[in-house]
Image (cartoon, rainbow, N blue to C red; front, side, top):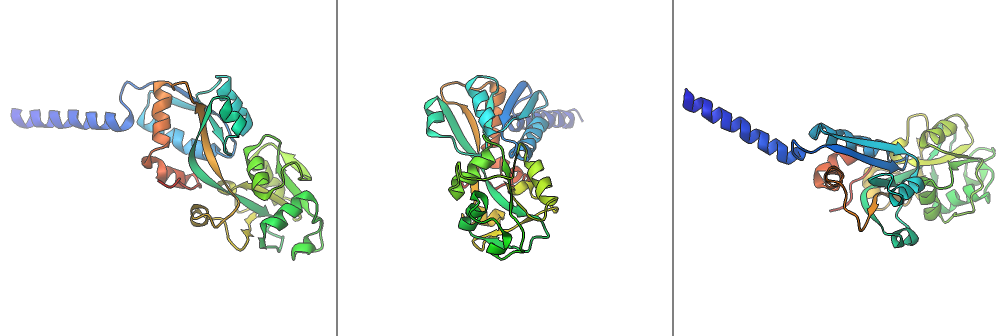
Length: 272
């Protein structure tokens, strides 16, 4: 009986050690601060919650300020990790920042369900936003004015959309909104509106159309056939070590273990 009890105790202790290795250790504690892209809210939520479940001494926080603000927060030392829904620019890298791609996001082009248009080329989408096309009948829709909805200056989603479509500083927005959810709500409430949002943010109140004949999906984003896509990036200082908790979180997010969570968050894992 004593021998059996000893074996059970050893087994429990071994299980505890293995759990500690998986979860990051019983002594891991502290706060991991993230700041930036509102498009990455769902993604960072899944990652943070899963990590905290495994490491109950750690708190992961998220401040949804937009990609540009998150990048600046890293430079100023106001957060551990910045979140950007665009790649870093050369001038940002020159300031000592490092960007690590953690997921791929498709930017869905959304219309009101009443709009009969189902497919547009990248060139047509660009023309709708620059004002070259002002009526939906020019692209096979009803005789109605185009209402172009987008994001505010500094938004990673806007930067990604405009860089892919070649419309930087050319868009004529009817409204430039400060959050992804506001874009969805505005398009849902206006039959003549067009908008762009992260694929993960598309709801049944709007419809995501095809681009060049290809619908946005995990498969088409992964294989690159859906053209309007961008990277989700974690931003850190290249020459400064993260705290132990922040480094463990960073390692977790960039591991193969996190791929299932990436998919749950509605975005696509990077190729390994």
